[in-house]
Image (cartoon, rainbow, N blue to C red; front, side, top):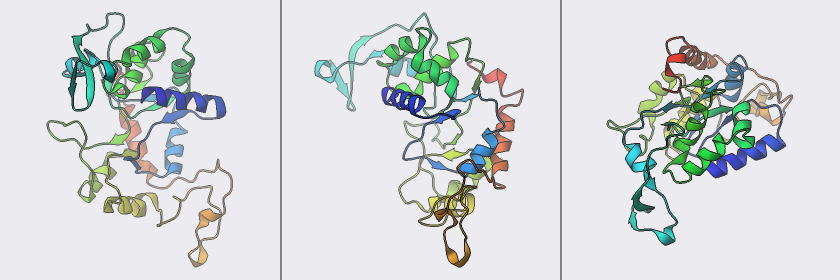
Length: 271
């Protein structure tokens, strides 16, 4: 997963210009704010902020993810739940500190250029280490950013997702439904996960949060068509740089202000 993500980032760096953040999403994610609302709020942020939930308190993950040695299935010694590993365990690294967290991140162009073009060996060293780490997306970027002095003070300890877990948490989060709608809205998060296919809560999000009609795009500043007679205004598009935020952007603004508050920002960086 990390290899494919880094490959996608490398293509983006080569082919596209004028972008500031990379956001990874899956088919189980869904937006809670329109694109224009997200662009509007992020346009006011410093371009060096990286959003990723992280901690160095890896707990049970030390023995179940960090220490096992993952090997080729053709050479496995034991098998459990379709995952192959050797009976041998490796020691914890001494040259860098392990961090883990959410696999869902919002990362800056500057940091990702460092990961791809790495002007020192840290990104490559950690990539080799996380090749033998279960659920590498939950640790690779976190360890790179928190082990480098140029980036460890750029972290915001939040993945910008609304995710509901069991207590104690299981491997996967709770599937969100209509009963979670109000909590999703109050969270201010721009994304949520995970959702079942065609769940009614998705229609409610479309209607009340995204102002999106069935079979149409989420409207934005680039939609300049006429909406009379029920026509889709986004059939005719104008400047892709036009941004027309809605009142829903205030929820995201409130979350960002809270995350950047002096009590939440610096004290929670790479701890």
